[in-house]
Length: 411
Image (cartoon, rainbow, N blue to C red; front, side, top):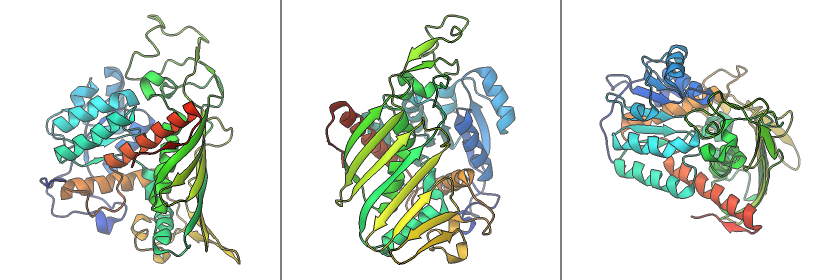
Protein backbone atom coordinates (compact mmCIF):
# COMPACT_ATOMS: atom_id res chain seq x y z
CA UNK A 1 0.00 0.00 0.00
CA UNK A 2 1.33 3.42 -0.93
CA UNK A 3 2.33 5.94 1.71
CA UNK A 4 -0.13 8.72 2.54
CA UNK A 5 -0.02 11.85 4.62
CA UNK A 6 -0.52 11.13 8.31
CA UNK A 7 -3.56 12.84 9.78
CA UNK A 8 -5.37 12.77 13.08
CA UNK A 9 -4.65 12.12 16.72
CA UNK A 10 -6.07 10.26 19.66
CA UNK A 11 -6.94 12.33 22.67
CA UNK A 12 -8.01 9.67 25.14
CA UNK A 13 -6.81 6.35 26.44
CA UNK A 14 -7.46 3.72 23.78
CA UNK A 15 -7.33 -0.06 23.74
CA UNK A 16 -3.65 -0.91 23.74
CA UNK A 17 -2.93 2.74 24.44
CA UNK A 18 0.84 2.40 24.37
CA UNK A 19 0.70 1.00 20.86
CA UNK A 20 -2.17 3.07 19.49
CA UNK A 21 -1.30 6.64 20.40
CA UNK A 22 0.29 8.94 17.81
CA UNK A 23 1.41 12.13 19.53
CA UNK A 24 3.02 13.50 16.35
CA UNK A 25 -0.24 14.01 14.49
CA UNK A 26 -1.70 17.50 14.61
CA UNK A 27 -5.47 17.10 14.40
CA UNK A 28 -8.24 14.54 14.94
CA UNK A 29 -9.44 12.40 12.07
CA UNK A 30 -12.69 13.60 10.52
CA UNK A 31 -15.19 10.78 10.14
CA UNK A 32 -18.59 10.30 8.49
CA UNK A 33 -20.94 7.37 9.18
CA UNK A 34 -23.54 6.16 6.66
CA UNK A 35 -26.23 4.21 8.50
CA UNK A 36 -27.62 4.94 11.96
CA UNK A 37 -29.13 1.66 13.10
CA UNK A 38 -27.71 -0.55 15.84
CA UNK A 39 -24.36 -1.08 14.14
CA UNK A 40 -24.05 2.56 13.12
CA UNK A 41 -24.41 3.51 16.78
CA UNK A 42 -21.66 1.04 17.70
CA UNK A 43 -19.38 2.58 15.06
CA UNK A 44 -20.19 6.10 16.24
CA UNK A 45 -19.28 5.29 19.85
CA UNK A 46 -15.97 3.80 18.69
CA UNK A 47 -15.27 6.85 16.52
CA UNK A 48 -15.67 9.16 19.51
CA UNK A 49 -13.69 6.81 21.74
CA UNK A 50 -10.79 6.99 19.30
CA UNK A 51 -10.71 10.77 19.65
CA UNK A 52 -11.95 11.41 16.11
CA UNK A 53 -14.52 14.00 15.05
CA UNK A 54 -17.86 12.58 13.93
CA UNK A 55 -18.58 15.29 11.40
CA UNK A 56 -21.62 13.79 9.66
CA UNK A 57 -24.12 10.93 9.62
CA UNK A 58 -26.73 9.78 7.10
CA UNK A 59 -29.77 7.62 7.79
CA UNK A 60 -32.57 6.16 5.68
CA UNK A 61 -34.47 9.48 5.63
CA UNK A 62 -33.43 13.09 6.26
CA UNK A 63 -35.54 13.20 9.44
CA UNK A 64 -33.97 10.03 10.79
CA UNK A 65 -30.59 11.50 9.93
CA UNK A 66 -31.30 14.62 12.00
CA UNK A 67 -32.44 12.50 14.94
CA UNK A 68 -29.36 10.29 14.61
CA UNK A 69 -27.04 13.28 14.52
CA UNK A 70 -28.41 14.42 17.88
CA UNK A 71 -28.30 10.95 19.43
CA UNK A 72 -24.84 10.03 18.14
CA UNK A 73 -23.19 13.39 18.75
CA UNK A 74 -22.51 14.12 15.07
CA UNK A 75 -21.85 17.66 13.95
CA UNK A 76 -24.20 17.43 10.96
CA UNK A 77 -26.71 15.20 9.17
CA UNK A 78 -26.51 14.56 5.44
CA UNK A 79 -29.71 13.67 3.61
CA UNK A 80 -28.11 11.26 1.16
CA UNK A 81 -25.67 8.43 1.94
CA UNK A 82 -23.90 8.78 -1.42
CA UNK A 83 -23.36 12.48 -0.81
CA UNK A 84 -21.94 11.63 2.61
CA UNK A 85 -19.46 9.18 1.03
CA UNK A 86 -17.86 11.99 -0.95
CA UNK A 87 -18.01 14.86 1.54
CA UNK A 88 -14.99 17.20 1.44
CA UNK A 89 -12.90 17.48 4.60
CA UNK A 90 -13.66 13.88 5.63
CA UNK A 91 -10.82 11.43 6.14
CA UNK A 92 -12.68 8.19 6.87
CA UNK A 93 -16.13 6.96 5.79
CA UNK A 94 -17.86 4.19 7.74
CA UNK A 95 -20.44 2.26 5.66
CA UNK A 96 -23.10 0.75 7.95
CA UNK A 97 -26.03 0.60 5.55
CA UNK A 98 -27.94 -2.44 4.29
CA UNK A 99 -25.72 -4.73 2.26
CA UNK A 100 -26.98 -3.88 -1.23
CA UNK A 101 -25.61 -0.32 -0.86
CA UNK A 102 -22.12 -1.27 0.27
CA UNK A 103 -20.46 -1.54 -3.15
CA UNK A 104 -21.52 1.79 -4.59
CA UNK A 105 -20.87 3.71 -1.36
CA UNK A 106 -17.42 2.14 -0.98
CA UNK A 107 -16.54 2.85 -4.60
CA UNK A 108 -17.69 6.46 -4.28
CA UNK A 109 -15.69 6.96 -1.09
CA UNK A 110 -12.51 5.41 -2.51
CA UNK A 111 -12.83 7.47 -5.69
CA UNK A 112 -13.08 10.58 -3.50
CA UNK A 113 -9.84 9.63 -1.72
CA UNK A 114 -11.41 8.48 1.55
CA UNK A 115 -10.30 5.67 3.80
CA UNK A 116 -13.19 3.25 4.36
CA UNK A 117 -14.57 1.03 7.08
CA UNK A 118 -17.31 -1.17 5.60
CA UNK A 119 -19.58 -3.54 7.46
CA UNK A 120 -19.68 -7.16 6.41
CA UNK A 121 -20.58 -8.64 4.10
CA UNK A 122 -18.35 -6.39 2.06
CA UNK A 123 -20.64 -7.02 -0.92
CA UNK A 124 -23.59 -9.25 -1.76
CA UNK A 125 -21.51 -11.41 -4.11
CA UNK A 126 -17.91 -12.60 -4.17
CA UNK A 127 -16.91 -11.00 -7.47
CA UNK A 128 -17.95 -7.55 -6.27
CA UNK A 129 -16.17 -8.04 -2.94
CA UNK A 130 -12.95 -8.92 -4.77
CA UNK A 131 -13.39 -5.84 -6.96
CA UNK A 132 -13.72 -3.60 -3.90
CA UNK A 133 -10.61 -5.11 -2.33
CA UNK A 134 -8.67 -4.44 -5.54
CA UNK A 135 -10.02 -0.89 -5.73
CA UNK A 136 -8.85 -0.15 -2.19
CA UNK A 137 -5.37 -1.39 -3.02
CA UNK A 138 -5.23 0.65 -6.22
CA UNK A 139 -6.41 3.76 -4.37
CA UNK A 140 -3.76 3.32 -1.66
CA UNK A 141 -6.40 3.78 1.03
CA UNK A 142 -6.78 1.96 4.33
CA UNK A 143 -9.93 -0.15 3.99
CA UNK A 144 -11.11 -2.43 6.79
CA UNK A 145 -14.01 -4.74 7.69
CA UNK A 146 -15.11 -5.07 11.34
CA UNK A 147 -14.42 -8.70 12.10
CA UNK A 148 -14.16 -7.44 15.65
CA UNK A 149 -14.16 -10.76 17.50
CA UNK A 150 -10.45 -10.84 16.64
CA UNK A 151 -9.99 -8.12 19.24
CA UNK A 152 -10.95 -10.03 22.35
CA UNK A 153 -7.76 -10.36 24.40
CA UNK A 154 -8.33 -14.08 24.95
CA UNK A 155 -8.84 -14.66 21.23
CA UNK A 156 -5.40 -13.12 20.76
CA UNK A 157 -4.13 -15.39 23.54
CA UNK A 158 -5.55 -18.46 21.80
CA UNK A 159 -3.97 -17.39 18.51
CA UNK A 160 -0.59 -16.90 20.20
CA UNK A 161 -0.76 -20.36 21.81
CA UNK A 162 -1.51 -21.96 18.46
CA UNK A 163 1.31 -20.03 16.77
CA UNK A 164 3.89 -21.06 19.38
CA UNK A 165 2.89 -24.70 19.06
CA UNK A 166 2.01 -25.08 22.73
CA UNK A 167 -1.16 -27.09 21.94
CA UNK A 168 0.60 -29.29 19.39
CA UNK A 169 -0.49 -29.87 15.78
CA UNK A 170 -4.16 -29.02 15.23
CA UNK A 171 -6.37 -32.07 14.78
CA UNK A 172 -9.91 -30.65 14.81
CA UNK A 173 -11.69 -27.30 14.46
CA UNK A 174 -15.35 -26.92 15.35
CA UNK A 175 -17.94 -24.63 16.88
CA UNK A 176 -21.11 -22.68 16.29
CA UNK A 177 -22.64 -19.23 16.05
CA UNK A 178 -26.18 -19.22 17.41
CA UNK A 179 -28.78 -16.45 17.77
CA UNK A 180 -32.54 -16.34 18.36
CA UNK A 181 -33.63 -12.91 17.14
CA UNK A 182 -35.38 -14.36 14.05
CA UNK A 183 -36.81 -17.45 15.74
CA UNK A 184 -40.51 -16.82 15.02
CA UNK A 185 -42.56 -15.88 11.98
CA UNK A 186 -43.32 -12.51 13.61
CA UNK A 187 -39.61 -11.63 13.57
CA UNK A 188 -38.63 -9.70 10.45
CA UNK A 189 -35.85 -7.38 9.34
CA UNK A 190 -34.37 -6.02 6.14
CA UNK A 191 -31.71 -8.75 6.34
CA UNK A 192 -34.40 -11.33 5.49
CA UNK A 193 -34.91 -9.64 2.10
CA UNK A 194 -32.49 -11.08 -0.46
CA UNK A 195 -32.71 -7.89 -2.55
CA UNK A 196 -31.29 -5.87 0.33
CA UNK A 197 -29.03 -8.38 2.07
CA UNK A 198 -27.97 -10.84 -0.62
CA UNK A 199 -28.58 -14.51 -1.36
CA UNK A 200 -27.21 -15.66 2.01
CA UNK A 201 -28.46 -14.36 5.34
CA UNK A 202 -27.42 -16.39 8.39
CA UNK A 203 -24.10 -17.52 7.00
CA UNK A 204 -23.13 -14.20 5.39
CA UNK A 205 -24.24 -12.27 8.46
CA UNK A 206 -22.74 -14.32 11.29
CA UNK A 207 -21.17 -17.45 9.81
CA UNK A 208 -18.65 -15.17 8.12
CA UNK A 209 -17.56 -13.98 11.56
CA UNK A 210 -16.97 -17.56 12.73
CA UNK A 211 -14.98 -18.52 9.64
CA UNK A 212 -12.85 -15.39 9.90
CA UNK A 213 -12.17 -16.16 13.55
CA UNK A 214 -11.24 -19.80 13.01
CA UNK A 215 -8.80 -18.88 10.25
CA UNK A 216 -7.37 -16.07 12.38
CA UNK A 217 -6.82 -18.26 15.44
CA UNK A 218 -5.74 -21.44 13.68
CA UNK A 219 -3.45 -19.78 11.14
CA UNK A 220 -4.95 -22.08 8.50
CA UNK A 221 -7.53 -21.52 5.77
CA UNK A 222 -10.65 -23.34 4.70
CA UNK A 223 -9.99 -25.21 1.46
CA UNK A 224 -13.34 -26.88 0.79
CA UNK A 225 -16.83 -26.96 2.29
CA UNK A 226 -19.86 -29.25 2.30
CA UNK A 227 -22.96 -27.40 3.47
CA UNK A 228 -26.66 -27.74 4.15
CA UNK A 229 -28.85 -24.62 4.34
CA UNK A 230 -32.27 -24.64 6.00
CA UNK A 231 -35.07 -22.08 5.89
CA UNK A 232 -36.81 -23.07 9.12
CA UNK A 233 -39.33 -20.21 8.99
CA UNK A 234 -40.60 -20.24 5.38
CA UNK A 235 -42.92 -17.23 5.80
CA UNK A 236 -42.65 -14.13 7.96
CA UNK A 237 -44.99 -11.29 8.86
CA UNK A 238 -43.61 -8.34 6.97
CA UNK A 239 -42.12 -5.51 9.04
CA UNK A 240 -41.87 -2.01 7.60
CA UNK A 241 -38.29 -1.35 8.67
CA UNK A 242 -36.41 -1.87 5.43
CA UNK A 243 -34.11 1.10 5.68
CA UNK A 244 -32.34 2.75 2.75
CA UNK A 245 -34.40 1.13 0.02
CA UNK A 246 -37.79 0.58 -1.54
CA UNK A 247 -37.39 -3.21 -1.85
CA UNK A 248 -39.81 -4.77 0.59
CA UNK A 249 -41.97 -1.62 0.57
CA UNK A 250 -42.56 -1.16 -3.14
CA UNK A 251 -45.56 -3.47 -3.30
CA UNK A 252 -47.04 -2.39 0.01
CA UNK A 253 -48.87 0.69 -1.13
CA UNK A 254 -48.61 4.27 0.05
CA UNK A 255 -49.66 3.45 3.57
CA UNK A 256 -47.14 0.65 4.11
CA UNK A 257 -47.80 -3.08 4.41
CA UNK A 258 -51.18 -4.39 5.39
CA UNK A 259 -51.50 -5.71 8.92
CA UNK A 260 -50.09 -9.23 9.23
CA UNK A 261 -49.08 -9.36 5.56
CA UNK A 262 -46.95 -12.46 5.09
CA UNK A 263 -44.12 -12.94 2.67
CA UNK A 264 -42.09 -15.99 1.63
CA UNK A 265 -38.53 -16.27 2.88
CA UNK A 266 -35.82 -17.22 0.39
CA UNK A 267 -32.73 -16.87 2.60
CA UNK A 268 -31.49 -19.43 5.12
CA UNK A 269 -32.07 -19.45 8.87
CA UNK A 270 -29.61 -22.28 9.56
CA UNK A 271 -26.42 -23.49 7.91
CA UNK A 272 -24.52 -26.63 8.84
CA UNK A 273 -21.04 -26.80 7.31
CA UNK A 274 -18.34 -29.44 7.24
CA UNK A 275 -14.97 -28.26 6.00
CA UNK A 276 -11.34 -29.17 5.55
CA UNK A 277 -8.46 -26.73 5.68
CA UNK A 278 -5.45 -26.32 3.46
CA UNK A 279 -3.43 -27.96 6.21
CA UNK A 280 -5.67 -31.03 6.07
CA UNK A 281 -7.60 -30.39 9.29
CA UNK A 282 -11.26 -31.46 9.46
CA UNK A 283 -13.88 -29.19 10.96
CA UNK A 284 -17.51 -28.19 11.27
CA UNK A 285 -19.67 -25.22 12.23
CA UNK A 286 -23.40 -24.76 12.92
CA UNK A 287 -24.85 -21.31 12.22
CA UNK A 288 -28.38 -20.38 13.29
CA UNK A 289 -30.50 -17.27 13.79
CA UNK A 290 -33.49 -19.29 15.05
CA UNK A 291 -32.15 -21.01 18.21
CA UNK A 292 -34.30 -19.90 21.18
CA UNK A 293 -32.32 -18.68 24.15
CA UNK A 294 -29.09 -18.20 22.23
CA UNK A 295 -28.53 -14.47 21.96
CA UNK A 296 -25.10 -14.20 20.36
CA UNK A 297 -23.17 -17.35 21.15
CA UNK A 298 -20.07 -17.62 18.99
CA UNK A 299 -18.19 -20.69 20.20
CA UNK A 300 -14.85 -21.83 18.77
CA UNK A 301 -12.85 -24.89 19.77
CA UNK A 302 -9.34 -25.69 18.49
CA UNK A 303 -8.19 -29.18 19.40
CA UNK A 304 -4.47 -29.87 19.16
CA UNK A 305 -2.50 -33.00 19.91
CA UNK A 306 -1.50 -31.70 23.35
CA UNK A 307 -4.36 -29.39 24.37
CA UNK A 308 -7.72 -27.96 23.35
CA UNK A 309 -8.60 -24.26 23.39
CA UNK A 310 -12.25 -23.25 23.79
CA UNK A 311 -13.60 -19.68 23.51
CA UNK A 312 -17.20 -18.53 23.98
CA UNK A 313 -18.00 -14.94 22.95
CA UNK A 314 -20.75 -14.71 25.58
CA UNK A 315 -18.15 -15.55 28.25
CA UNK A 316 -15.20 -13.59 26.84
CA UNK A 317 -13.27 -13.13 30.07
CA UNK A 318 -11.94 -16.70 30.04
CA UNK A 319 -10.27 -19.20 27.73
CA UNK A 320 -10.64 -22.90 28.55
CA UNK A 321 -7.46 -24.93 28.05
CA UNK A 322 -8.09 -28.66 28.24
CA UNK A 323 -5.44 -31.38 28.54
CA UNK A 324 -5.79 -35.09 29.05
CA UNK A 325 -4.41 -34.98 32.60
CA UNK A 326 -5.88 -31.67 33.68
CA UNK A 327 -7.63 -28.54 32.47
CA UNK A 328 -7.44 -24.87 33.37
CA UNK A 329 -9.29 -21.64 32.80
CA UNK A 330 -7.15 -18.70 31.71
CA UNK A 331 -8.64 -15.35 32.75
CA UNK A 332 -8.08 -11.99 31.15
CA UNK A 333 -5.15 -10.65 33.13
CA UNK A 334 -2.68 -8.60 31.07
CA UNK A 335 0.15 -9.45 33.44
CA UNK A 336 -0.11 -13.10 32.44
CA UNK A 337 -1.15 -12.94 28.78
CA UNK A 338 1.02 -13.28 25.70
CA UNK A 339 2.55 -9.95 24.59
CA UNK A 340 0.34 -10.08 21.48
CA UNK A 341 -2.78 -10.26 23.64
CA UNK A 342 -1.95 -8.08 26.65
CA UNK A 343 -2.32 -4.65 24.91
CA UNK A 344 -5.98 -5.41 24.22
CA UNK A 345 -6.75 -6.03 27.91
CA UNK A 346 -7.44 -2.40 28.78
CA UNK A 347 -9.22 -2.90 32.11
CA UNK A 348 -7.90 -4.49 35.31
CA UNK A 349 -8.74 -8.18 35.81
CA UNK A 350 -12.27 -8.69 37.09
CA UNK A 351 -13.60 -5.59 35.31
CA UNK A 352 -15.36 -7.13 32.29
CA UNK A 353 -14.61 -6.12 28.73
CA UNK A 354 -17.06 -6.83 25.94
CA UNK A 355 -18.19 -6.33 22.37
CA UNK A 356 -17.97 -2.53 22.34
CA UNK A 357 -14.41 -2.75 23.66
CA UNK A 358 -13.57 -4.99 20.70
CA UNK A 359 -15.10 -2.46 18.34
CA UNK A 360 -13.20 0.37 20.00
CA UNK A 361 -9.94 -1.55 19.55
CA UNK A 362 -10.73 -2.31 15.90
CA UNK A 363 -11.47 1.33 15.10
CA UNK A 364 -8.42 2.52 17.05
CA UNK A 365 -6.20 0.13 15.09
CA UNK A 366 -7.82 1.21 11.81
CA UNK A 367 -7.15 4.86 12.59
CA UNK A 368 -3.61 4.03 13.62
CA UNK A 369 -3.13 2.52 10.15
CA UNK A 370 -4.69 5.63 8.56
CA UNK A 371 -2.31 7.89 10.45
CA UNK A 372 0.66 5.71 9.55
CA UNK A 373 -0.40 5.45 5.92
CA UNK A 374 -0.23 1.64 5.89
CA UNK A 375 -1.74 -1.43 7.52
CA UNK A 376 1.71 -2.95 7.87
CA UNK A 377 2.70 -3.24 11.49
CA UNK A 378 -0.91 -3.29 12.73
CA UNK A 379 -1.20 -6.96 13.65
CA UNK A 380 -4.45 -8.73 12.91
CA UNK A 381 -6.27 -5.77 11.34
CA UNK A 382 -9.07 -7.17 9.11
CA UNK A 383 -8.92 -5.52 5.70
CA UNK A 384 -10.99 -5.62 2.54
CA UNK A 385 -8.94 -8.68 1.52
CA UNK A 386 -10.45 -10.45 4.54
CA UNK A 387 -13.90 -9.21 3.53
CA UNK A 388 -13.41 -10.63 0.04
CA UNK A 389 -12.17 -13.87 1.60
CA UNK A 390 -15.40 -14.13 3.63
CA UNK A 391 -17.44 -13.56 0.47
CA UNK A 392 -15.57 -16.38 -1.29
CA UNK A 393 -16.35 -18.77 1.58
CA UNK A 394 -20.01 -17.72 1.56
CA UNK A 395 -20.20 -18.29 -2.18
CA UNK A 396 -18.72 -21.79 -1.79
CA UNK A 397 -21.22 -22.57 1.00
CA UNK A 398 -24.15 -21.48 -1.19
CA UNK A 399 -22.90 -23.57 -4.12
CA UNK A 400 -22.48 -26.60 -1.87
CA UNK A 401 -25.92 -26.23 -0.32
CA UNK A 402 -27.51 -25.89 -3.75
CA UNK A 403 -25.73 -28.84 -5.36
CA UNK A 404 -25.14 -31.18 -2.42
CA UNK A 405 -21.43 -31.38 -3.21
CA UNK A 406 -18.08 -30.48 -1.72
CA UNK A 407 -17.01 -27.11 -3.12
CA UNK A 408 -13.54 -25.61 -3.17
CA UNK A 409 -12.92 -22.21 -1.60
CA UNK A 410 -10.77 -20.08 -3.93
CA UNK A 411 -7.26 -19.45 -2.67
